[in-house]
Length: 225
Image (cartoon, rainbow, N blue to C red; front, side, top):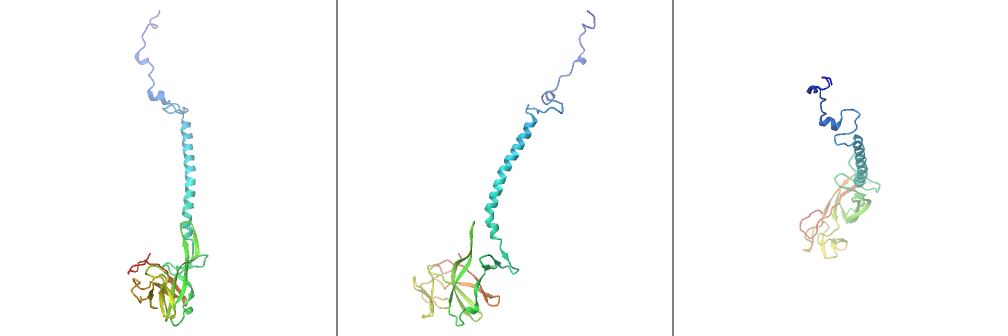
């Protein structure tokens, strides 16, 4: 046996051991596994599946949101004139301050101030629907020179309808015999306050504009509701 065959290999000639990271992850660009042993293509598939799932959930939610918001969008979709008035398909004209343009003018009211009852109409809008040109209440209108005096027909006592009695020259509530003069002042102690006046203006060459409101009953104070 030769001397070279019996020689102990030098320590420097021993091949270096692979590191744990090189053994696990590999060093080749073509290696398709990560350190957990899971192929990288699985990560791409899972990511794509998650993205599709999120899209499937978002689209119906977006459509549902548009469905819920649609009534609010339609509520503001009115034809507005430069003066800030809005008119819809029902023919109701209302300005930004809440005044409704009535269908009669001041010339339709008697010159002597005799009260005329008028039914006020407006658009009734809830979350889902819009009902145009619906009756919302009634008023008594009186012509005083070139102005209009307007009263809500609801009695401030307990909410009954106040009538006009031409023979007595007053307003009268048949429920509890409340009575008022033609200026709306109480004629007995039954009503807690005078008849509720409403804001009224004469515009557009004599057309009456009215801000309709309702008020709390059975109280001495005029409180809008």
